[in-house]
Image (tube, rainbow, N blue to C red; front, side):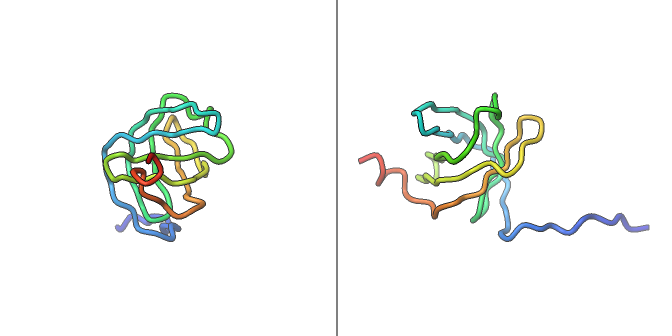
Amino acid sequence: MAIERPKDQRQFGRRAVFKPGTVVLDDGQRIDGTILDLSEGGAKIKVPNPNLLTGEFFFEVPSDDLIVRCRVIRVDSGIVGLRYIKPPRRLSWVKK
């Protein structure tokens, strides 16, 4: 008997990763975490205190030279789903 699984509703495909990422809140606070997956439209990250992530904020992925404005769409046991609300930019261009 086949196991029925719910249809994936994501607009973009995702790829599993395991690398560092940093949330940068508008007040300048930086929250380091681990990226679990990335897609063209968002990411899934693990952070120590997901309750600090409210409204919009920047998300940096230094190893991919990426910075993107995003917001939380899901929180489950310290795992946070992010949706990009602006196109990603190169982190190295922003820090000049």
